[in-house]
Image 1 (tube, one colour):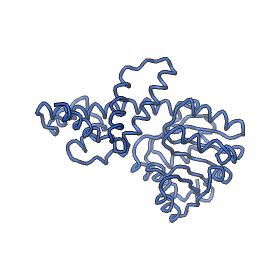
Image 2 (spheres, rainbow, N blue to C red):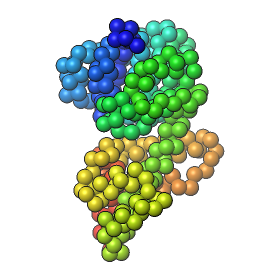
Image 3 (tube, one colour):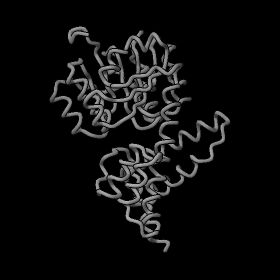
Image 4 (cartoon, one colour):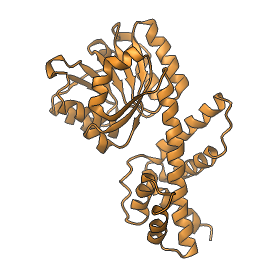
Length: 300
Protein backbone atom coordinates (compact mmCIF):
# COMPACT_ATOMS: atom_id res chain seq x y z
CA UNK A 1 0.00 0.00 0.00
CA UNK A 2 1.43 3.37 -0.98
CA UNK A 3 1.88 6.06 1.66
CA UNK A 4 -0.72 8.17 -0.15
CA UNK A 5 -3.40 5.48 0.18
CA UNK A 6 -2.78 4.51 3.79
CA UNK A 7 -5.78 4.78 6.14
CA UNK A 8 -5.78 7.37 8.89
CA UNK A 9 -5.33 5.84 12.33
CA UNK A 10 -6.41 7.09 15.73
CA UNK A 11 -4.33 5.49 18.49
CA UNK A 12 -5.48 5.48 22.14
CA UNK A 13 -3.06 4.44 24.87
CA UNK A 14 0.63 5.32 24.73
CA UNK A 15 2.12 3.07 27.36
CA UNK A 16 5.33 1.15 26.69
CA UNK A 17 3.77 -1.05 24.02
CA UNK A 18 1.41 1.57 22.59
CA UNK A 19 4.14 4.18 22.17
CA UNK A 20 6.37 1.63 20.45
CA UNK A 21 3.56 0.79 18.01
CA UNK A 22 2.96 4.49 17.40
CA UNK A 23 6.63 4.92 16.51
CA UNK A 24 6.40 2.02 14.08
CA UNK A 25 3.34 3.55 12.39
CA UNK A 26 5.10 6.92 12.17
CA UNK A 27 8.15 5.23 10.64
CA UNK A 28 5.84 3.97 7.90
CA UNK A 29 4.23 7.42 7.49
CA UNK A 30 0.68 6.52 8.45
CA UNK A 31 -1.55 9.56 9.12
CA UNK A 32 -1.78 9.30 12.91
CA UNK A 33 -3.72 10.95 15.72
CA UNK A 34 -2.95 10.00 19.33
CA UNK A 35 -4.71 10.16 22.68
CA UNK A 36 -2.91 9.36 25.92
CA UNK A 37 -3.61 9.57 29.61
CA UNK A 38 -0.53 9.23 31.79
CA UNK A 39 2.71 9.97 29.96
CA UNK A 40 2.92 13.43 28.49
CA UNK A 41 6.48 12.66 27.45
CA UNK A 42 5.35 9.92 25.04
CA UNK A 43 2.64 12.15 23.58
CA UNK A 44 5.13 14.94 22.97
CA UNK A 45 7.53 12.52 21.33
CA UNK A 46 4.81 11.36 18.93
CA UNK A 47 3.80 14.95 18.14
CA UNK A 48 7.41 15.85 17.41
CA UNK A 49 7.44 13.07 14.82
CA UNK A 50 4.34 14.31 13.03
CA UNK A 51 1.37 12.83 14.88
CA UNK A 52 -1.66 14.94 15.77
CA UNK A 53 -3.27 14.96 19.21
CA UNK A 54 -6.97 14.51 19.94
CA UNK A 55 -8.74 15.83 23.01
CA UNK A 56 -11.11 12.88 23.37
CA UNK A 57 -11.85 9.39 22.13
CA UNK A 58 -14.91 10.86 20.41
CA UNK A 59 -12.65 13.12 18.35
CA UNK A 60 -10.39 10.17 17.51
CA UNK A 61 -13.39 8.20 16.23
CA UNK A 62 -14.85 11.08 14.23
CA UNK A 63 -11.69 11.73 12.23
CA UNK A 64 -10.05 8.38 11.48
CA UNK A 65 -10.61 5.27 9.39
CA UNK A 66 -9.22 2.87 12.02
CA UNK A 67 -9.27 3.29 15.80
CA UNK A 68 -6.67 1.37 17.81
CA UNK A 69 -6.60 0.92 21.57
CA UNK A 70 -3.64 -0.40 23.59
CA UNK A 71 -4.66 -0.21 27.23
CA UNK A 72 -4.08 -2.11 30.44
CA UNK A 73 -7.51 -3.35 31.52
CA UNK A 74 -11.01 -4.01 30.23
CA UNK A 75 -12.32 -1.19 32.42
CA UNK A 76 -9.93 1.24 30.77
CA UNK A 77 -11.03 0.10 27.32
CA UNK A 78 -14.70 0.45 28.28
CA UNK A 79 -14.03 3.96 29.62
CA UNK A 80 -12.71 5.02 26.20
CA UNK A 81 -15.48 3.29 24.25
CA UNK A 82 -18.58 4.41 26.14
CA UNK A 83 -19.90 7.73 27.39
CA UNK A 84 -20.49 11.15 25.78
CA UNK A 85 -16.78 11.53 24.91
CA UNK A 86 -16.21 7.88 24.01
CA UNK A 87 -15.48 6.22 20.70
CA UNK A 88 -19.06 5.04 20.32
CA UNK A 89 -20.40 8.60 20.48
CA UNK A 90 -18.41 9.74 17.44
CA UNK A 91 -17.56 6.65 15.44
CA UNK A 92 -18.37 6.68 11.72
CA UNK A 93 -20.25 3.88 9.99
CA UNK A 94 -17.79 1.31 8.67
CA UNK A 95 -14.95 2.27 11.04
CA UNK A 96 -12.93 -0.65 12.39
CA UNK A 97 -11.99 -0.44 16.08
CA UNK A 98 -9.19 -2.73 17.31
CA UNK A 99 -8.31 -3.59 20.91
CA UNK A 100 -4.63 -4.60 21.11
CA UNK A 101 -4.63 -4.97 24.90
CA UNK A 102 -5.36 -8.04 27.02
CA UNK A 103 -9.04 -7.82 27.90
CA UNK A 104 -11.82 -10.03 29.21
CA UNK A 105 -13.52 -11.87 26.32
CA UNK A 106 -17.02 -11.16 27.64
CA UNK A 107 -16.28 -7.43 27.77
CA UNK A 108 -14.92 -7.62 24.23
CA UNK A 109 -18.08 -9.29 22.94
CA UNK A 110 -20.28 -6.71 24.67
CA UNK A 111 -18.34 -3.81 23.12
CA UNK A 112 -18.59 -5.49 19.73
CA UNK A 113 -22.37 -5.78 20.05
CA UNK A 114 -22.71 -2.10 20.97
CA UNK A 115 -20.46 -0.87 18.15
CA UNK A 116 -22.40 -2.98 15.66
CA UNK A 117 -25.56 -1.06 16.61
CA UNK A 118 -23.97 2.15 15.29
CA UNK A 119 -22.53 0.54 12.17
CA UNK A 120 -18.95 0.13 13.33
CA UNK A 121 -16.83 -3.02 13.53
CA UNK A 122 -14.79 -4.39 16.44
CA UNK A 123 -11.78 -6.67 16.55
CA UNK A 124 -9.63 -8.01 19.35
CA UNK A 125 -5.97 -8.36 18.45
CA UNK A 126 -3.85 -8.89 21.57
CA UNK A 127 -0.10 -8.93 21.22
CA UNK A 128 2.81 -11.21 21.90
CA UNK A 129 6.48 -10.22 22.29
CA UNK A 130 7.92 -6.97 23.61
CA UNK A 131 7.95 -3.21 22.91
CA UNK A 132 11.35 -3.75 21.28
CA UNK A 133 9.71 -6.06 18.77
CA UNK A 134 6.93 -3.50 18.24
CA UNK A 135 9.44 -0.85 17.17
CA UNK A 136 10.53 -3.10 14.33
CA UNK A 137 7.13 -4.46 13.31
CA UNK A 138 7.87 -7.91 14.73
CA UNK A 139 4.93 -8.48 17.08
CA UNK A 140 2.81 -11.61 17.25
CA UNK A 141 -0.78 -10.49 16.66
CA UNK A 142 -3.72 -12.70 17.69
CA UNK A 143 -6.58 -11.15 15.76
CA UNK A 144 -10.24 -12.14 15.91
CA UNK A 145 -13.52 -10.82 14.55
CA UNK A 146 -15.29 -10.92 11.22
CA UNK A 147 -13.03 -12.26 8.49
CA UNK A 148 -14.00 -9.34 6.21
CA UNK A 149 -12.80 -6.90 8.87
CA UNK A 150 -9.56 -8.82 9.26
CA UNK A 151 -8.86 -8.64 5.54
CA UNK A 152 -9.69 -4.92 5.54
CA UNK A 153 -6.92 -4.17 8.06
CA UNK A 154 -4.58 -7.06 7.30
CA UNK A 155 -1.98 -4.91 5.55
CA UNK A 156 -1.81 -2.60 8.58
CA UNK A 157 -1.49 -5.55 10.95
CA UNK A 158 1.29 -6.94 8.79
CA UNK A 159 3.12 -3.64 9.16
CA UNK A 160 2.96 -4.07 12.93
CA UNK A 161 3.53 -7.79 13.26
CA UNK A 162 5.78 -10.53 11.97
CA UNK A 163 3.25 -13.26 12.76
CA UNK A 164 -0.37 -12.23 12.24
CA UNK A 165 -3.11 -14.76 12.95
CA UNK A 166 -6.86 -14.71 12.45
CA UNK A 167 -8.27 -16.94 15.19
CA UNK A 168 -12.01 -16.79 14.60
CA UNK A 169 -14.98 -14.96 16.06
CA UNK A 170 -14.70 -11.85 18.22
CA UNK A 171 -13.18 -12.70 21.61
CA UNK A 172 -11.06 -15.60 20.37
CA UNK A 173 -7.93 -13.44 20.38
CA UNK A 174 -8.37 -12.40 23.98
CA UNK A 175 -9.21 -15.95 24.97
CA UNK A 176 -6.03 -17.31 23.42
CA UNK A 177 -3.93 -14.47 24.88
CA UNK A 178 -5.18 -15.26 28.39
CA UNK A 179 -4.30 -18.92 27.91
CA UNK A 180 -0.88 -17.87 26.63
CA UNK A 181 -0.27 -15.56 29.58
CA UNK A 182 -1.46 -18.16 32.10
CA UNK A 183 1.10 -20.58 30.73
CA UNK A 184 3.98 -18.12 30.31
CA UNK A 185 3.52 -16.46 33.71
CA UNK A 186 3.31 -19.87 35.36
CA UNK A 187 6.63 -20.81 33.74
CA UNK A 188 8.21 -17.50 34.81
CA UNK A 189 6.93 -17.82 38.37
CA UNK A 190 8.01 -21.45 38.68
CA UNK A 191 11.48 -20.67 37.31
CA UNK A 192 11.80 -17.77 39.75
CA UNK A 193 11.00 -20.06 42.65
CA UNK A 194 13.38 -22.72 41.30
CA UNK A 195 16.32 -20.31 41.48
CA UNK A 196 15.56 -19.43 45.10
CA UNK A 197 15.12 -23.08 46.12
CA UNK A 198 18.55 -23.66 44.55
CA UNK A 199 19.89 -20.87 46.78
CA UNK A 200 18.51 -22.62 49.84
CA UNK A 201 20.00 -25.93 48.73
CA UNK A 202 23.45 -24.45 48.10
CA UNK A 203 23.36 -24.82 44.32
CA UNK A 204 24.66 -21.93 42.24
CA UNK A 205 21.97 -20.27 40.12
CA UNK A 206 24.20 -20.28 37.04
CA UNK A 207 24.73 -24.03 37.32
CA UNK A 208 21.00 -24.63 37.73
CA UNK A 209 20.39 -22.62 34.58
CA UNK A 210 23.12 -24.43 32.64
CA UNK A 211 21.58 -27.81 33.39
CA UNK A 212 17.93 -26.83 32.90
CA UNK A 213 18.50 -24.80 29.75
CA UNK A 214 20.14 -27.79 28.08
CA UNK A 215 17.15 -30.03 28.72
CA UNK A 216 13.49 -30.20 27.69
CA UNK A 217 12.51 -27.61 30.31
CA UNK A 218 14.21 -24.85 28.33
CA UNK A 219 12.15 -21.91 27.04
CA UNK A 220 12.84 -18.27 26.17
CA UNK A 221 10.90 -17.36 29.34
CA UNK A 222 13.65 -19.12 31.30
CA UNK A 223 16.15 -16.71 29.74
CA UNK A 224 14.11 -13.68 30.83
CA UNK A 225 14.11 -14.89 34.44
CA UNK A 226 17.77 -15.95 34.30
CA UNK A 227 18.75 -12.47 33.09
CA UNK A 228 17.70 -11.10 36.49
CA UNK A 229 18.48 -14.10 38.68
CA UNK A 230 22.03 -14.64 37.35
CA UNK A 231 23.04 -11.53 35.40
CA UNK A 232 21.25 -8.88 37.48
CA UNK A 233 19.32 -7.47 34.50
CA UNK A 234 15.56 -7.35 35.18
CA UNK A 235 14.68 -5.43 32.01
CA UNK A 236 14.64 -8.24 29.44
CA UNK A 237 10.91 -8.80 29.93
CA UNK A 238 9.17 -5.42 30.22
CA UNK A 239 5.94 -6.70 31.77
CA UNK A 240 4.90 -5.68 35.27
CA UNK A 241 4.00 -8.18 37.98
CA UNK A 242 0.73 -6.33 38.62
CA UNK A 243 -0.22 -6.74 34.94
CA UNK A 244 0.58 -10.44 35.08
CA UNK A 245 -1.62 -10.70 38.17
CA UNK A 246 -4.43 -8.94 36.31
CA UNK A 247 -4.15 -11.37 33.40
CA UNK A 248 -4.28 -14.38 35.73
CA UNK A 249 -7.37 -12.87 37.35
CA UNK A 250 -8.99 -12.55 33.92
CA UNK A 251 -7.93 -16.11 33.09
CA UNK A 252 -9.52 -17.64 36.19
CA UNK A 253 -12.71 -15.61 35.62
CA UNK A 254 -12.78 -16.95 32.07
CA UNK A 255 -12.32 -20.55 33.17
CA UNK A 256 -15.10 -20.09 35.73
CA UNK A 257 -17.42 -18.86 32.98
CA UNK A 258 -16.43 -21.86 30.83
CA UNK A 259 -17.04 -24.20 33.78
CA UNK A 260 -13.50 -25.46 33.28
CA UNK A 261 -11.89 -25.89 36.71
CA UNK A 262 -8.24 -24.86 36.73
CA UNK A 263 -5.78 -26.29 39.23
CA UNK A 264 -2.50 -24.54 38.39
CA UNK A 265 -3.63 -20.97 37.72
CA UNK A 266 -4.76 -20.19 41.30
CA UNK A 267 -1.25 -20.86 42.59
CA UNK A 268 0.35 -18.62 39.97
CA UNK A 269 -2.21 -15.91 40.65
CA UNK A 270 -1.63 -16.13 44.40
CA UNK A 271 2.13 -15.74 44.01
CA UNK A 272 1.75 -12.72 41.73
CA UNK A 273 -0.90 -11.20 44.02
CA UNK A 274 1.28 -11.62 47.11
CA UNK A 275 4.22 -10.00 45.33
CA UNK A 276 1.97 -7.10 44.30
CA UNK A 277 0.65 -6.68 47.83
CA UNK A 278 4.23 -6.57 49.14
CA UNK A 279 5.34 -3.71 46.92
CA UNK A 280 6.64 -5.60 43.88
CA UNK A 281 3.68 -4.93 41.59
CA UNK A 282 5.33 -2.20 39.53
CA UNK A 283 8.46 -4.27 38.92
CA UNK A 284 8.88 -6.57 35.94
CA UNK A 285 8.02 -10.26 36.17
CA UNK A 286 11.67 -11.49 36.36
CA UNK A 287 11.85 -9.67 39.73
CA UNK A 288 9.67 -12.47 41.13
CA UNK A 289 13.06 -14.05 41.89
CA UNK A 290 13.77 -11.21 44.33
CA UNK A 291 10.30 -11.46 45.85
CA UNK A 292 10.75 -15.18 46.52
CA UNK A 293 14.25 -14.57 47.88
CA UNK A 294 12.90 -11.97 50.31
CA UNK A 295 10.05 -14.26 51.35
CA UNK A 296 12.38 -17.22 51.92
CA UNK A 297 14.73 -15.00 53.92
CA UNK A 298 11.88 -14.07 56.22
CA UNK A 299 11.07 -17.73 56.79
CA UNK A 300 14.41 -19.32 57.70
